[in-house]
Image (cartoon, rainbow, N blue to C red; front, side, top):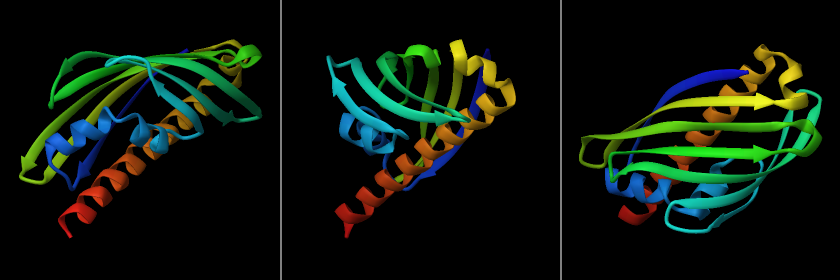
Length: 156
């Protein structure tokens, strides 16, 4: 079952700062809902453990994340796959684009595609879609607050 989630965040930080944060495992770990660990294996590969509750199913995913189509500091594609045991699997990716509207102000847009299978897919597309949108929204708003907050501390 596949779905597409799109969104935009206006971030009070320079494009270089936002790009650096998008590639920082500590920042990503802090912003990914339910993330227990995130390890950088190479410049473009990370492994993660994420615990999520989707409807009645609570699952712990072991996943791999890969950054592709890197065009610093303007865009990249983040591709990931997680296995959640009997709960099933989730895989997907997002095209992330950055545009510096003015110095210190960056617009981040994303178009994410997600696909789930196994027990989770049986929960119904409305629950999966609404949960996915909520998780994407939580990630990007927390990412925005983290990066904007870090910018404010540095310039203060």
